[in-house]
Length: 175
Image 1 (spheres, one colour):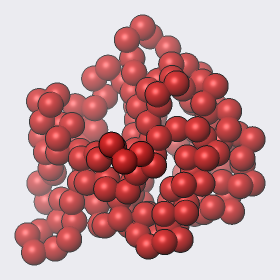
Image 2 (cartoon, one colour; image 1 turned 45 degrees about the vertical axis):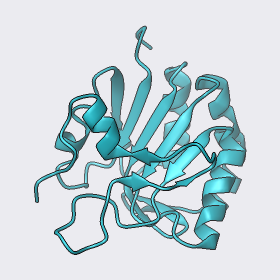
Image 3 (cartoon, one colour; image 1 turned 180 degrees about the horizontal axis):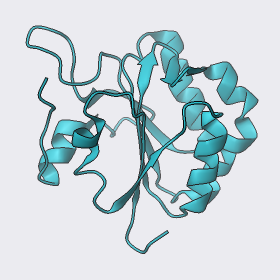
Image 4 (cartoon, rainbow, N blue to C red; image 1 turned 180 degrees about the vertical axis):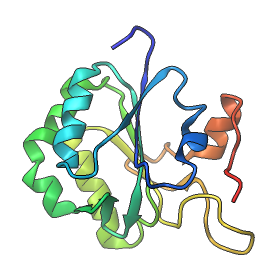
């Protein structure tokens, strides 16, 4: 990994205007697209191992309560448990203060979903932040936002709007 690169951005190409969304984040970071017809956890594990020292991992994909959706693959707590050895290896490659931000709609909605987030934290050893609402720029009057209110640490409260404003980017996409 190049010196000074601290972000790993994993993006699902099927997200509308993903290139606009991640443009500002990809400065000082590495952008990766995981092929649709692969085992996402295995590929992510390889990418993390190849880029040691990363302290922020952004995952932009689709989601539902208790699961991430990547291409045609649904990743649930059961899948995390099946891949626990791989997930546990992440903290060996990431920085000691690594954070994983899951930008996927509704993934942390409800008690069972929060268990998914806790399990992700326990297996990876990383701080996790996730959304419990629809994610993204949705027309006025809807519940969509860029916040990641569900976290594994009380002091964490992520917002893509705040992050992009700090680095001089656009806080939302135009529909």
